[in-house]
Length: 392
Image 1: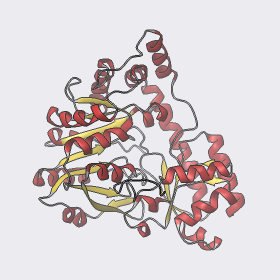
Image 2 (image 1 turned 30 degrees about the vertical axis):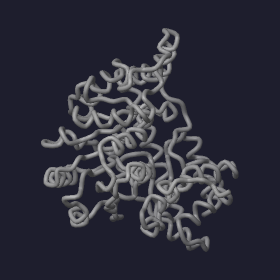
Image 3 (image 1 turned 60 degrees about the vertical axis):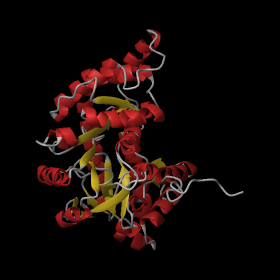
């Protein structure tokens, strides 16, 4: 009998992260493919979670999240994003940002609704849209001399009376783009004109470089009441395995998100919520250290890739480098990003991600390869040494 996969999920297959991590493991490669740190998160959070376990906080949490965490998220949002959500009616704790995306799609939109999405995109976006039966209208972030940017006319053309939402991710995975004020204000004007909701994935909100600050679209006049802000503790505090995220939205939108969340996971592990609450209130020094480390790794890896023939777009945020590989693949007799990412683990001992998987037309991303630098210095150093040996 053939494998039973529903029609809505059949186009997605196994995620590219699973495939490339398996290939890296097979060849004992340094894994710069999947975006998870190879070091542990701060003691502040772990200690608070242990205390919560010992204090008996081990049963189901309230569906929207434990009050101590919702209050901490509200303080974090006020301090970081300049918004002041009500922790009781506007903050919902989810199983990572990925569940928050699914709950938003399922809880706020109906089959056939159109959502504008920027590509390349985090792969779960399209899968969550497929669950909800919504239609994706794609706007491409095109490579520029220094980074990636969308075309104003293409964004305007993608929106119409059928548009119910715009999904943005800033800082952006995988390009490292941080949407600037002009872009956020243009998206604001279009959302208001078409009465659309903004869904803003801000998981990399604290990972920016060169003095560039993240700005939440929810802080722009006219957007607070039509924006869902999604984030998590995983990226800011290197605790991706805790899967504690949240959605911040006005009560009318939170009601829809919670209606889906209650049937997806209902609640998130209680002691981990206590741990994240402590991190949000007391972990600012940890974030400062993490930003400095990632900035150093970005420079180290980016400069080395450039020396080896890659054309690097230096990211303004997140912890990924998009590197144009044409010169390298021509030397190796390869063609696409997939070819190179299958070659690298076996012949260079380094794993990477082919970003063509994040485009509706794979050809749009075939000239690039994505490397993650959210690793310890010794791992990045080893990856560079291996790449030099294989490619120099």
